[in-house]
Image (cartoon, rainbow, N blue to C red):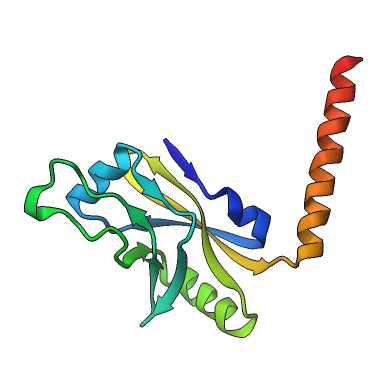
Amino acid sequence: MEIINRKARHNYFVEEEYEAGIVLTGTEIKSVREGNCNIKDCYGIVRNDEVFLLNMYIAEYKEGSIFNHDETRDRKLLLHKKEIKKIKESLEIKGLTLVPLKAYFKGSNLKILLGVCRGKKNYDKRESIKERDINREVAKNLKNF
């Protein structure tokens, strides 16, 4: 099961990608396995040399009772120190943003694909749409031959 943030590649230029583990509680992982997760509006920050994911929505687990989790709490990401240092430098110096691109299972662990991204302007977005339409048209014409 994959949860893809489609808006991320539309709104940002992805400069670098990192794969990170995520610290979850028991009810959170059960809810994600059911597909009750959304990474559309979340972003990452570096706080005290640790990376956190903010605003990631994971719905409450139905059978969680009193042990249920907060739906949009800050979640810690697991990365190597060198990766955290590199991300921290690029976020501070270059003015980039840390955006989750995809959430997926690798074995039994949930992984997050993070992108260090630069925002697109409106004319960049229009150019991307134009390119996509041209490529679609070319593929359709090749298929007809």
